[in-house]
Length: 280
Image (cartoon, rainbow, N blue to C red; front, side, top):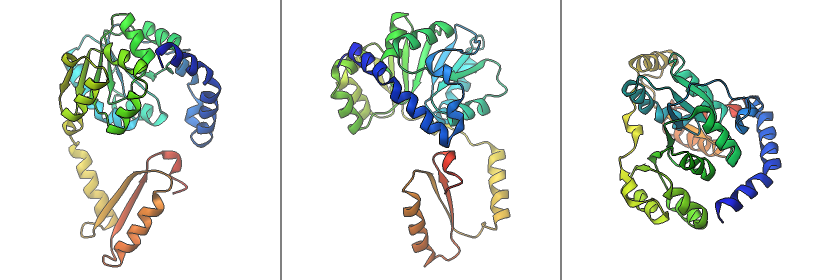
């Protein structure tokens, strides 16, 4: 499959995209909001000529935060546009940078050539930084057409994902060849990117930026206060975080087993998606 065929199939899948948005909005109403942004329509007014950072959802947004703050400090004259794909990611971005006037935000448009081009013409970035593995062929190609370098930061690529990309070499190889830099977490993953078509001189191992995260001292204080409130300073506490449907029952069964030997154990169960909070 080449990029032309990919784009045709993407257009043919538009009804399914609309259906998926509608279905998700039934559980999470925020998916029904700002739909135009997903097609590069009605984008908010933005400063041009800065740095574009794409973090698909909450986890990537949190991981990108130290890097974004470093970019703000290093390039005080440049705005930073942060895009994501999910309402929870959007909420996190706006929360993290609520008091930073140079940070602007919108959803990343779907990977239609015309939507990608319209988005890039709207913000006219000097560089694009994509977090982890969010690779969209048309966005990357439209950047290359405009001479905008693209970086894959904190890049990771599992063996399974590499096999998947490898099955579409006609699409993957040109896309990776158009990218300017791959800052990869491990050498094993770096070699996978090279094997798939990334230019060797553009691939470097930098480790995971998630280890660069710092915890706000106030958050630590709040955690201690919370444990005091729950009377858990002396109780064993374990957390099952970011769970999906079907996993909660397994966790609860494990907790029941644990309580046979640790009757005072406390389980904190945190679903991955907020729309599941009430049901869990």
